[in-house]
Image: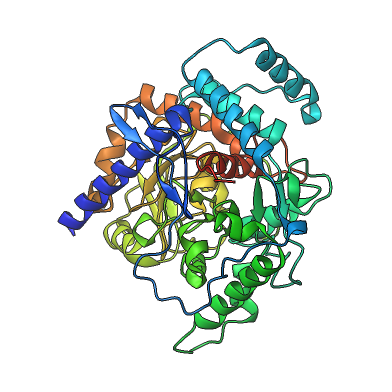
Length: 481
């Protein structure tokens, strides 16, 4: 357990370093690599002493495809789509973000664009990201403005509810349905009016609803029918439209919060290996690739009501060192509850199930640190719940890039503890000085606006931050047409 924990901790640190390197300029230079038989032009640049390249389209190694891959086919003349203006616009956005990352003064056109974006912001919100919680605040701000100005996503019309165009908007998987509904809202400024103007294409298939309506209990090949439905959907849009085949899925997006989504996405090799998968279960040990995939925050809307964050109690009134309540799901929670449950330590308020009459969120609001261990899978809604309660998150996970790690530096507003050091939790948290704790909590409060759900979505809120994660990954690949 000790050796495994050390390896996991090193792996998490490597993931964080990779995200940091990408976030310095947000976008990576074009590779001299083959993509579907066409050579991309351009060379790499050095980031922190290492040469990074954009990812290129690939298949899934050693993956037996039970579902058919959509065959490449020449498109009739009427279907051929020229996206040169789109790629040219993305190139200009990359250049603007690089300039901002280097601290260069915006061009006159760029300054005017920023002024117009602030003026046109919904509700007069002229927020400008600043502070240590951002890896590179000027680059993030410029990237966000470029996204507001240009980014369009086309949602395929194929499919019928409940398997498509509808997802859960309440419970622990609520982000899947909330995002899907937002993208199909006619008020959404990021929704493309027609596919020819789109930078990315959303596959509106709900893995949660596939599991709910298609999954058969106690069957041996339990994933096969789910994969078959998803593969069929990809085949339909690939045969009906030119967009999948021209990029081999690299500009397509699937969003899901179900634990099985990474496995179901193996239905099609190009979907798994090339598409942008936005997943709650963002486990790097199970094929999640932070270079092209994005972490979806897990939010437990038990009653479907969208709430606002709170500051909770001030630091001097937070009398509990740490708090956790949750079932014994997975080996990390088993270790946590096995060591701390029943110790009756007033500093370590750890429960499997809360006694009747106790308020979960009130207990979070009076704790200094809120423990966020993985369950059966790596994601935990407690990360967002901690931020909402003004409680410093203690992330206990293996191979999990927290949400929005491209732009948010979680080391500045949370504490990461390897699973192997769970017995040392009290000592680790007690050694955090009062000054350091207050700084961490202040930064948690700064980050709250990025974890609020609004409908319709608002600037810099959770849905727009998810869109920005997709935008960055679309910037990170150039397509040869």
